[in-house]
Image 1 (cartoon, rainbow, N blue to C red):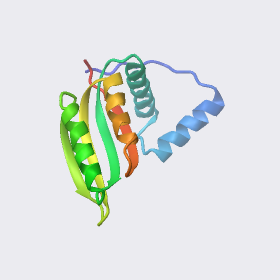
Image 2 (image 1 turned 90 degrees about the vertical axis):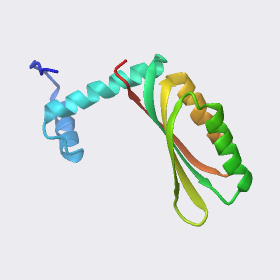
Image 3 (image 1 turned 45 degrees about the vertical axis):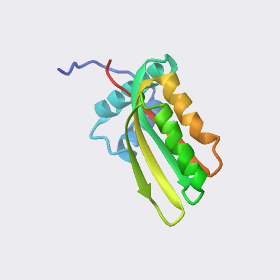
Length: 134
C-alpha cells in the first residue's frame, strides 16, 4: 500500500498532546500516531456497526472452583464458531488466564465475553477487538 502525503492543521493544545502521545507511546513520528488513531477509530466504528472483527477474550478465574472450569469450557464449546484458538495459562496455584482468540460479528463477540462475566469465580474479563479488513 502506497503512502499519501497531506497537510493537517491542529490547534496548539491538541498538537502538544499529540507530541506527548508520540513520546509516551513510542511512535516514531506524528504520522504513525495519527495513522494509529485513525485505524483505532475505524475499528471502533466497525465494533459499533456490528461488522466482522477479530480479537481476544481474556479471562482470569479461580481454577480451584471445579464447576467453574466446566462452565468456561461449556461456553467455549457453545461458541466454537467464533473461537479460533485458546490458550490456558496457570498463573499460580489458584488463578488461570484464558486467552481466547475470536473472529465474528461484533455483537456476537460481545455476547460471548459477557457469558463469562456472570460466572462465580471469574475475576476479570476483557474483550479486545480489532478490524479484519473485510
